[in-house]
Figure 1 (spheres, each protein chain N blue to C red):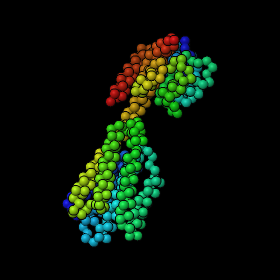
Figure 2 (figure 1 turned 90 degrees about the vertical axis):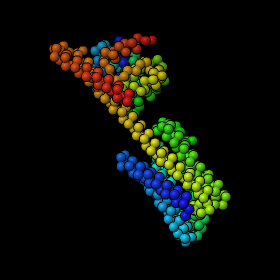
Figure 3 (figure 1 turned 90 degrees about the horizontal axis):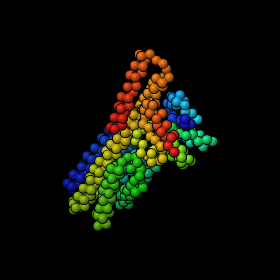
Figure 4 (figure 1 turned 30 degrees about the horizontal axis):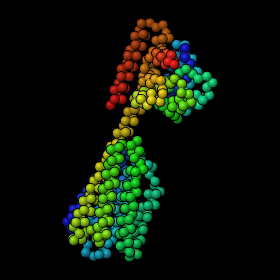
Length: 283
Length: 121
């Protein structure tokens, strides 16, 4: 295997490992099921990288093809899980669709491969990959308002960057395939397409990682702001009741000096608390 | 003295405002504990109250939506929104609500605002 391919794949595996660690950390901290989907996705993507690397060890063409088809299947499956996991931030996760697509993504190319149609099997996995990229590329056109309302416009632009880099990977892949290069670009004479392919692949994974961190950061920030609003509102209501009750008591009753003093003290503290709430709202 | 419609999901606040405003001589014509009921009750009024005193964060329908629907039914109605949620102030006033009163406030302030609002034509 060419040194560019080895280096490119190792870098990809490292980036995917970072993605996996981040997803595990998010799951540990936030206990949300969408992170399980992301963990599965990043884990399968690491397997994809490893299988590509292993395929380079063998001389036997059948063994190379077996690991290449594993690489093709796991890459499309991993991207499906990662994108579905990220998609679930602003839409409910379609679990049945995910299950059906997973079965199709595994069994259709595998069947073609087992029947001896190697080239078709590789092309099917590439087609699935392109379909995922095309589908998630349409989202920004449809969901801009949802991004703006629920998350942030910054996350929207990062998403556009993810889509753009994925489109570049796809485009370069298609161009090279039309020029007669075969799946994987692992041969020694393929140094230019190999470099372009791994360079863009690493860039897209890196941007995807930044996007997922940005997304989680924005969501946490919005969640904290909502909590701040809720608590300051509820506290404001409680103080309103105490404030009103003491106001009303001082209007109603003929009280001795000590009671008036105590009521004034409560009212003074209510005023201080009201000021404190205003300060909290400003944070 | 004014006729007032009180809307707040916190029953203690309704009770205290009711007592205080009654002492001052105002008449509480109706009470509602969420925005949806508030709009329903407003539909049924034969005589429109002088002032509506409304909270914002309420179940079923929030104050902003309820105020919008009530103002669509009667553009002349004087609504005071009292809420601890200051961020809605501009949106509330843009709707045509007369006054935004930020919670917590002194009851004395409430009586001044009601007087001021009910005197405005």
